[in-house]
Image 1 (cartoon, rainbow, N blue to C red):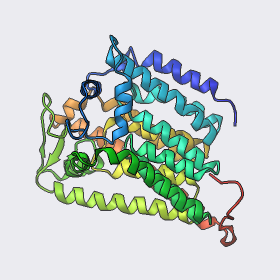
Image 2: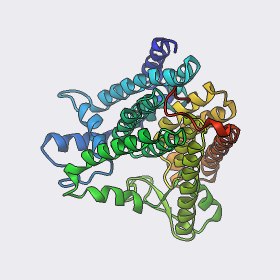
Image 3: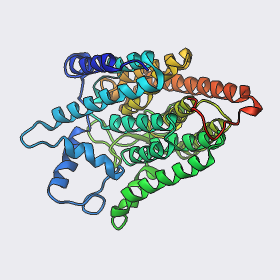
Image 4: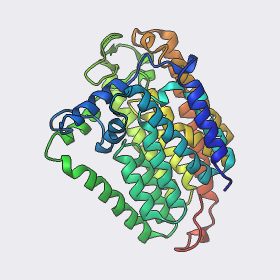
Length: 391
């Protein structure tokens, strides 16, 4: 492993140079004011889920509260905090994929823009990468516990935890697999327990009940089929703080994509169980979550960027290029063109559809790579219970 200080410095420099001024610094649509509101409620002694509705897992409150400094500008400090999280990701990417991955990841601000600093996703990404690194370095219980913490910041790392457990089991490390699974479950339970008496379950029902969001792949299908209505407006989002598509075939398409997503995620776990590389299967699971989910918020580019860099380092140039292009197209669309999309602009819908097609293509390429690796695994390579972990 080469030293990560140089790409980390590049990440910090780009964060300061391009996300605060210029064309990539557009924060005309942001969530920081919502986070500031939650931080104020916490500071006033309000209890999440009970005293106020909260749509995220409980540890999401940590970065929101940390940015609430006395006398400070909340959006500025939140951006600084996310910059620290971004820089913290670099050593983990370097350790997992080497210098090429670290340098590629350091360029993320140039592709993703200010959406990185106006959302807290990079905190969960940093924890996810740390958890993966611990699993790779043969500390699976610690790694899955960290993935549990990441899941309690934002739910998406749970799919990586499932892949990691399957990968360990397939290597013959069954004790590590079930101990890691217990550690993951214990962290989730401990973080959730203090809130179970309030409206904690409502946060999950909130996501269950959300309509198809207008930037998702399912929405692209609905744009083509027609006979749908857009929820909310350019001046007022819907009850879920966004804009979605309802009516007509929307319920059927949403159900279809839910099935496709579950099948894809199950496929990722099966491929990991059969010996496909952990990082490839983890990448596939995250891309499946993004490409096939009913919601595809622009900040999800933070989830994709480190895996694009890791795939590049693994020699998967096609998949890495497709993901990088998808991130770039997301930046073209959001926030500058988002309100045009809400107004039903066919050109913007086509742009979003092209981005979603890139994500689907990337998912297909990554799954094909994982399947080929699983097929090429010799029957005798049911990995021993000891020995170094392969990525």
